[in-house]
Length: 297
Image 1 (spheres, helix red, strand yellow):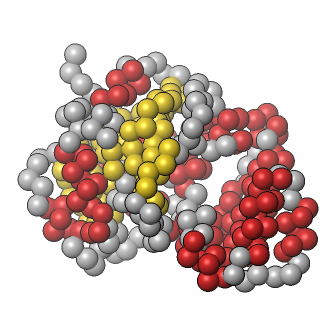
Image 2 (cartoon, rainbow, N blue to C red):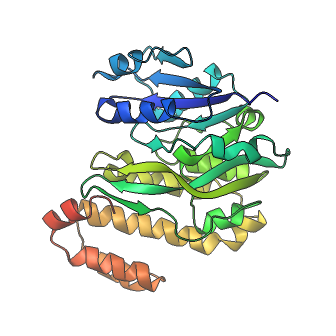
């Protein structure tokens, strides 16, 4: 039986610093039946020339007419795909050579399974160190409740079935949490297949959009929670945890923005002891140390 075609979406805006490593990890894949859908979101650096150096018909270049939001760019890329399955690789991340070949069980799975994901390493650029992202066993099957408690799916570790992604698009009103929103929506209806091996590398660096836009992250997450149906059993059971995460994001963004005395009261009231301790440490750190040492917090 011929291997299924995998469409790999790479959305890029000024990714020249890391792009060669990202693309080389695709060329190194043992699983060969794939196409790369590269969306150049009006980059002003050398991203286009780096990509076009690859003389491989599987690598397909598209450029937007103007710079658009990330999730509009992702949705545009989906329209260009032809694969039976869709994978995503962020321009600053890279895969192990066995990333695609490890998913053959998922490629032949029944209709209950909508997506698969694996464990990964976090690569901290400032210290040049790799750390295992998740040290426990990743959840498998109907995992909506698990993900609401502890979201462990990275978009660069994910492969989805084409028929699923055709009906469930990225919400383009988001700038940060669109990946989270998509996987949660899929998890309401379909099982997730987890692969425990660490086959992707997620780069943590000073230009990570999420870490540099903490207020946006908080506001998007607040909007997301307010739009959810808490009559759903999984959402109802995890409502307090979701609201706790929202409060954590609120305090974090305020700590990194401008420390206020009344925040200490909010921190003391925080229900999780470990997170309370972490927030207190951040609160009492001088701002210049906070913004350098805890840039990746």
